[in-house]
Image (cartoon, rainbow, N blue to C red):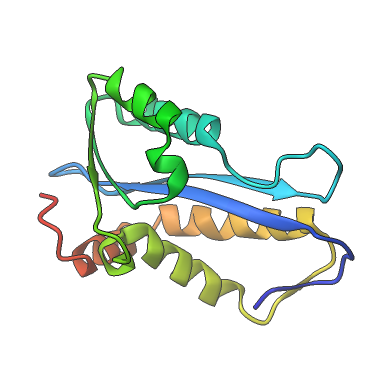
Length: 157
């Protein structure tokens, strides 16, 4: 648990992809969003945010992507289905329902949560800065990312 002393309904939302390419180090691509409890402020990620994440991944990885995704309602929305169908560089496979052990990103979140345990931050912005710092550390640990991928037992390469 990360304690934030600020009052209100603040929260942090995270989205990530773990990318693997045979013969290359795995990559963690993520986005973070802070909700400050302001009127008309978006609370979390929507389809547009996930679309921007996928477009950024395509730019960074420079090639076709095979996406193995969970069943979050945003991932299966009509808008997302139209987007996915229009991208010839993107092939999507959905994980079975209630199978977090098959999703390497769940391992990233578990590792991140452990690294943040028992810390106190005074503002949501301080917390999001810390989260980004910890995610950058994970990005630079290919052995950890390979372990998270191997833990899924999915035939990814």
